[in-house]
Picture 1 (cartoon, rainbow, N blue to C red):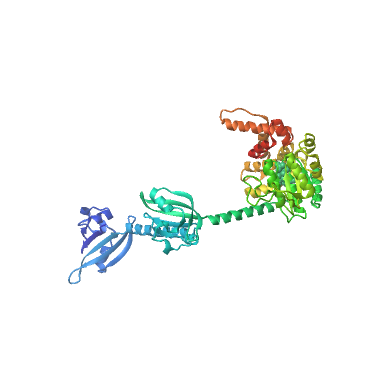
Picture 2: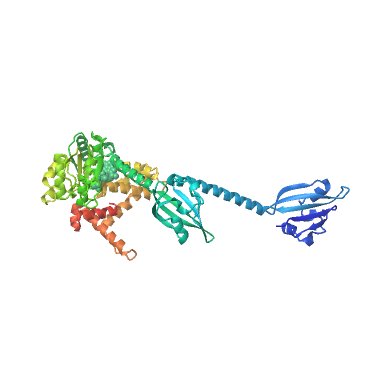
Length: 554
Ligand SMILES: Nc1ncnc2c1ncn2[C@@H]1O[C@H](COP(=O)(O)OP(=O)(O)OP(=O)(O)O)[C@@H](O)[C@H]1O
């Protein structure tokens, strides 16, 4: 980089104009020499220097978007007379850019340092020869090794058991993931991920991120404990959450409130989605067992053997894969509280016998065990199945039926209590507003009509779903649910059950899925929501129907 120079004589005529000045000003040397400086560089200030005889040192100015530092000095005769003036322009734009870049790099470095130190994972970096370059404080906390033990030392210095993954990566140039080993003087169990560091295609070292396995194990245990706790705290509904206006529902509600005051077994009967679980929660909440646990088991979701060990627990060595020390079952886990046995009709005859024994004797024998254990659990059972018919068919034990039938509560299907629909719909509105951040405040009169006419095979759950879809269909500014928001999903549902057209624009798998879904819909409709009957109509097991329904999120 050469400085631009311009010199003038006493008459302000340019006598020196170098090629750098040409680049800076855009004026050719031959056009500048001999000309008046004011004509060539209007703001050169050289006439001013000639006049005052005073130098101007390190003046900063912008010229053609470049940052220029200028020094202007008078040329003096031996007698001290001003005979001319010289300006030297130094273009510092690149220097400034460079300075800004260095500053930026420094910022990045500070940022990286902060991340390096703040991360909970231990990090170690080695150079291309495998000598320690850097570690963070998490590394020291985990391994017990400080900088002086590691920096400049061989990468193997922290290994207590296993191969050095730094060396491996430096040899292969490839990253490794999740290698378990022991590190440091305390032989900590860790998982390591190591990656090579390449700069312009040269391998200059490697970086290892080391996870503390013992911490992970402790966290997993904590999580399991928290999960168990959550299961215990899971009763979220009380009687005040149950919306009821129709006489049939008010009657069911009264019966449930009475049942809550007793210790008797309760049997909740009603189609899917009509609120059986809601009732079970509320009964528990209103009972003197409220501070005890509440557990729910879906008897249809587990195979017979799994269900037995889940319900009654098992002793060590009861079967292959049994946990060391055995496991407490749901009955013991809900001791002092309530056990909600959903889909009770799905229990095998054998498990029904065992359940009967628990209800009669208030004691259980864990799978593989010989000793009885006392339990104090209130059972709330639920089913959508016609149990009387199941007894006739030999699928449900009569003695268990009578044990369960102490306090039967029938929750009517939604189509038989249309009076409840507006209240339920408004209630869901409030909940969905909160969920979607909307401000929908009402439902138009004519939007309610189709809700009264629809058969609701999925009961209240389906109503909730239709409301949610209506809201999704609304424009963000709309605040009233209208018929046009509701009708499409009802029509879709009705159509899904009624028609099926073969399409060449969809995959075979999708079309089969749709056909299956419709067949299930139709069967459920014919069976008035009775899943057992629907399964029978379709020639599939109830379990498989449940599985399919859960896939369709019915
Ligand atoms: N009366 C009601 N008031 C308010 N919400 C209700 C009412 N009945 C049902 N719901 C809501 O409808 C949904 C389905 O209810 P719930 O799970 O209790 O039905 P279920 O009979 O146990 O169904 P399934 O037999 O399929 O398990 C839930 O979100 C529940 O909160």
